Length: 130
Image (cartoon, rainbow, N blue to C red; front, side):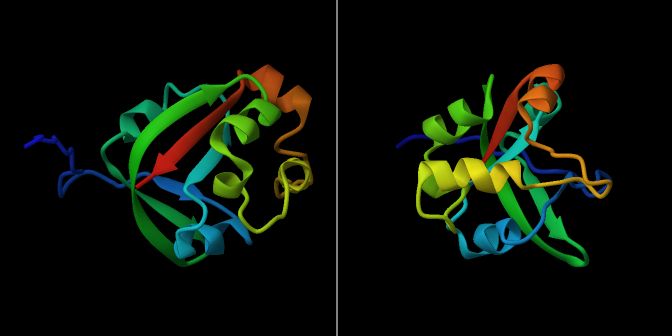
């Protein structure tokens, strides 16, 4: 029998929050989207492995356990390695997934997943959920 070790956040600790947008949030809730991307290096997110995080949109949230954190140099590399069906299940192809990510913007209108932003911040981090 294999024994596993799980790390849980203590009562005094705050659960990390990952903010997202639609349709990404609904796909995570449904269980179809099993990997969430963040621009930047994985350093900050490595501590999430084995812990629970709150995935939120506005006042709605769902709790998911993080099973792994992986790093990619480009958005295309992330989509290919993780599989477009896991990162953007609401679209119909790898190309459509790339387009969908390119359309994500900040509140100020800046493109989150532009090649320039990804390169300047050190790549794309994939956060995989149980």
